[in-house]
Image 1 (cartoon, rainbow, N blue to C red):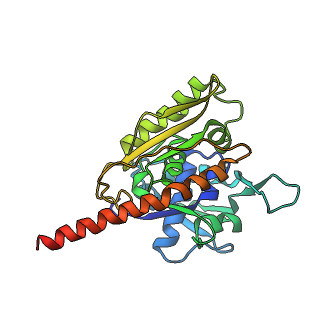
Image 2: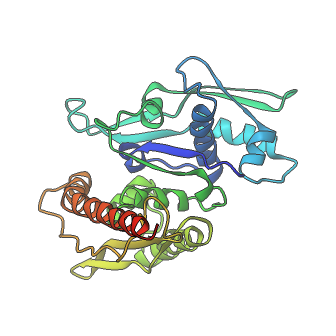
Image 3: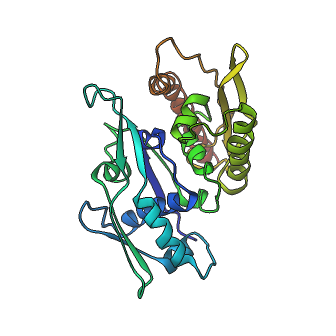
Length: 293
């Protein structure tokens, strides 16, 4: 796949609770990119048609059964939902579950699948107002070769802090967002099968390298992990030709502070300083180029 197609998602969406297979996640990513590439956008009434041959080429899949898989996983996708935190939206309601798709269909003779996303989902992946809804962005190529069910999710969580190069995530937040339930109750199992496997795949397939996470304990229990990462290509716009790696010293969560409140505070504390440093580095580079002319 030669084109570098951008993916946009709101922070609310990547922080929500849902469980999708890697194939279902790629259906979502494909829809986001196709809506932008064709400049048609996503509609609450008009289906988005996915051709199995184009989908296969986009993700480098060489499987004669790709249409059967696309059809099967799209039907599974139709039955999935998302759990959004609804603080302040609905009186007396802590969480709201929303369907991904409102319609699903297929055409065997043409080898196509058609989907219609729900209005809430469309607002999280298309027509995003960055002034009201913080969002992440990255290039589709960076996740195309990932097959682990948790790899893309971890990558997206880190992309929300790509200007900082590090992020602290609580174990509770990760388990709730991935909807693990009683699975991987032992931290050693969670670290091995969710975190370490995902890091290995991200380091191999994406544009970043994640260091070994730092474990944060409360008493004897590990309650959060700090993920430091860097871009493989130092000229990546997000990396912005950093002269030195960012110094990240996250303060602990405050009493009564939710995960979202904690993340918002960390962004305010570090983002402005980091952006200023990046701009200074870019300005210095431009001045050096001018002096060499």
